Amino acid sequence: MAIFVETIQEEALKRGILKLCCYSRQVYLNQQVIQVTGLEFNLLYLLMDKAPNIVSKRQIANYIFDGMLVGNEASLFTHISNLRRKLKCKNEQVVIQSIRGRGYCLLS
Image (tube, rainbow, N blue to C red):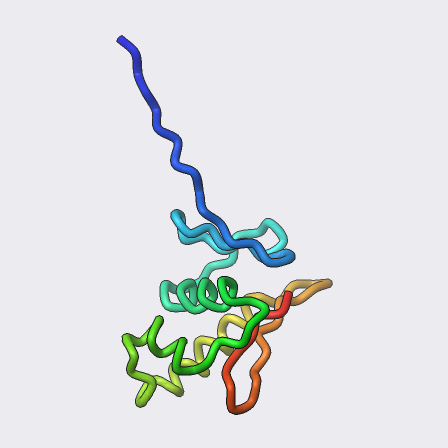
């Protein structure tokens, strides 16, 4: 009897020292796993996918909050702040830059 094992090819986004694995929903910084929430993962995916372009708050609201930015703006600021803290590294840092009046941009 033959046993067939299907290998799932992991889709990943990579920007410098940052790697995001889509299927397993894992985030790696310098090859170390970084713990993120589901919403933080989705936000980071959007920023990485659009990098180095600016992602507007409206685009984030549509992708993360089902189009509802009103009432979620403080939550967005909190999640951006949490991601910035989690993505700091000893020698290098992945930067989520605020672009006043426009949105956010991932620099790595």
